[in-house]
Amino acid sequence: MRAFAWFLGLMLVALAAIALFSWPAWLLLHPHFDFPFHRIGERVGMLALLLGLVAVARRLKVADRASLGYGLPRRAFVRELCIALALGVASMLAVVAMMSALGLLAWTRLGSFTAVALVKLIALRAVSGLAVAFIEETFLRGAMQTAIERESGTTVAVLLTAVVYAATHFFASYHIAPAQVTAASGVDLLLGTLREFARPADILDAFLALAAVGVVLGLVRAATGNIAACIGLHAGWVWVMLVTHELARPASGAPFGFLLSRFDGFVGWLVLGWTVLLALPLWRFYVARTARLTARAS
Image 1 (cartoon, rainbow, N blue to C red):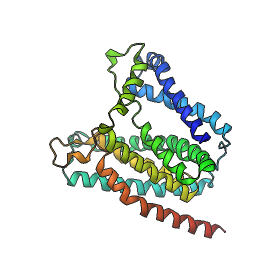
Image 2: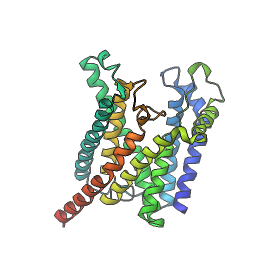
Image 3: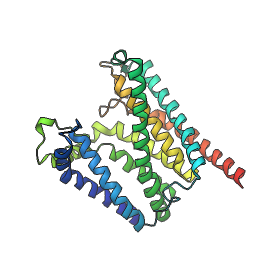
Image 4: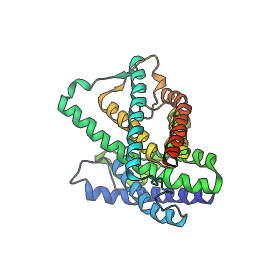
């Protein structure tokens, strides 16, 4: 578990960076950009993780392309990423369709978008989805899963990275209004975020759903030997979610409203159930696909 301890320590350093540097970053950026304080804190933490990852990856000997999940030739990597992106978009659109059919979503903002604005929104959220997927998959299914797998095996690596993946989605979830930002707001942001974990019943559905997604991505990484498909699936899921968040809101008083989490109004019991159903077919698809591609190359 030495590898996991290194990555856990890196995440603690990133949390400390949020507490210490979010306010200075706010002073630097807020006069020029209308970024919310929690978003700046989140970016500070991600930057600390990125800088620390370089050192930790070298220490654990996972800094090479293959260990980070980029061992495929570029053309094959892009092809596998695009196939997975299509699968991710299609599978998440199916979830959104189920939510709409059950009356869980109110598409209140859709009518306010012109065709041009809608296309722009979809394009920008695609970029956001890819950026999030590249960063998180390189860290989790790339460096972290590889390092833990070498020490403790695939099962432990998949489960531990899935738990970390789920937990990180609750960081910077505490919001501070611009007028209330002070020199102590970095610490307040961190403490407010950690309070989410003091009420586990409130986040249980979202945490389990995200952990299940993390397990699926870990299994795909293990089956393929790289993170191309992980990035594509992750980006496709995030892309659809971000667009849906912009266009719809959870419908108040819906009979099946409990299927959406109170955490973000999306990832909850319905997503958990769909992810569990999707896990085995998706894993089998990538096991068979990897076998075919390997046989073709040999």
